[in-house]
Length: 196
Image 1: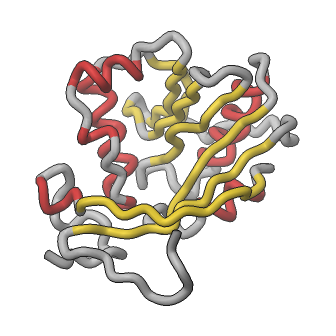
Image 2: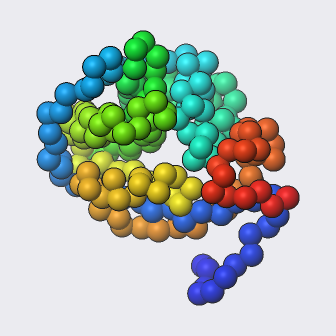
């Protein structure tokens, strides 16, 4: 257990504070329309599609967990019948990732949620979250949960809380810097300088 005060992070690593949130009953949603040219659909992804959207949505926020996975491991997740993946397309190009993971009994994890810059500010995030809440609670669950961290968008934590999630746990995560191993470009995550 970490005590109070500052703690060194080894060179070549990044550290983040992770906040876990949950809802134990469906939060209210609104029936909001999408802007012209934006459509919502479920996807049966292949590896190339998934890695492309994962990278385009998450590179700025240093999403790297799925980039470290080999093909078989990633395929095992995204092809699992208990995992549902959705996107928003703008003018025919997929620009969002919503991944709902029902592999835990009586629960759904909002495993990944995000938009590319092409959709930010369009109201698409609110639409996607309302869809996520309705889709999750349409299944026989008693808990819908998500986690975010200090490397994510500065708006993420407050957005999740406004959407009806309540924080219940906080952790510190230390990981090898993915930019030093070629998983992400060296200019990804400018809010976290590289120390190597």
